[in-house]
Image (cartoon, rainbow, N blue to C red; front, top):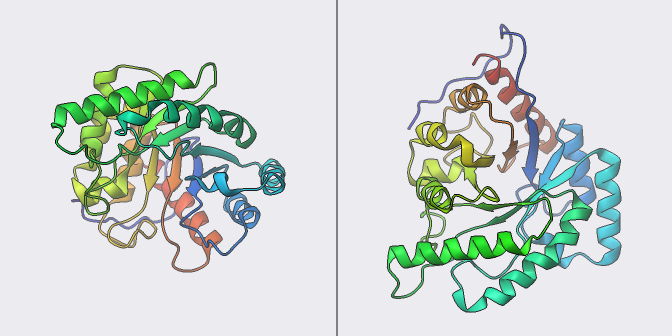
Length: 278
């Protein structure tokens, strides 16, 4: 694990990556209306937001209001989780197809380009190879269900400390599974917070798999707060992303400790400042 390096302003080489920044919305104040959370992101200089399945509970009126707000402030919902059924539920493939297809018009309204899945839970009595085959099959079914929709399917590994029941608990394994699939429609959501908690070695894994990294999630360990509060050396991580010419979203998925907009803005500025030193 990396010793954390302070991120200091000033004295940076000119130029920085033209990164786009987003935030998951579940980790922000859930008592605040969705429209206000989008305003917070825009005020912090962000152009993206991510959802789990909150969209499923929105009424038509709520959907219209949120879509109008996202256009007004210039925010795309870059990522949503399209299905409740998991990739390892091999007896529910028809439902998986149906839920992905159901999410396509939602994606078009929200400006969504990524559908994400966790692996799903272990299959009782199955070998590792059988579980991976089931997950691979589920990912291909989801990708096929997209038709002509301009959406990429993502696999998000979740660390074992958070959910030991899941079949894929590390980005290392997630990248291996997706690389074996060799399908350009399917990539990985690399959550650096989860990988640090579960496996570590986050930069080497990034270097070896940047071609399959569609988006990255950012939070520090421990506590899931903003970079600079824990043990992770995010200055080095941002520099590596810049050196690797990463062009996807930088998604903040941390719990703010104080003013939400101020913390989001500071996290964005620190990332760009570190990248200028790459």
